[in-house]
Image (tube, rainbow, N blue to C red; front, side, top):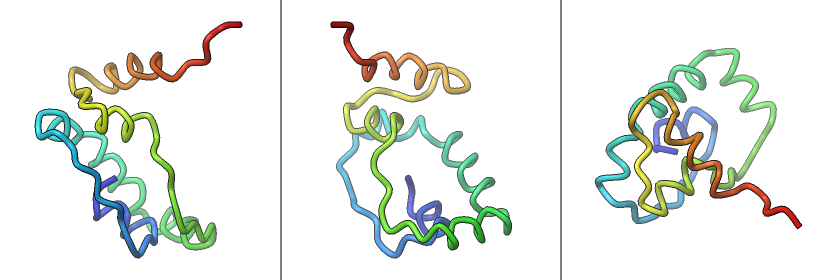
Length: 90
């Protein structure tokens, strides 16, 4: 999550994580979606009511930390990356 989205969600702090430029530069589309969503007054009010103080990493965050590019289509790579987190059958 970038700083702008964090601010819209009501977070006062962000935790910085080293990310490779090649992976980070492909996340602009999803960040624009997040700004559009969380910039809506109704969503901003919902975020404040929820009162969240922390948000754990989601699949896209984990992929960035693992230097896996997110680009290549509308969330196609993220859907592929989700396979990395599926439980193994017993």
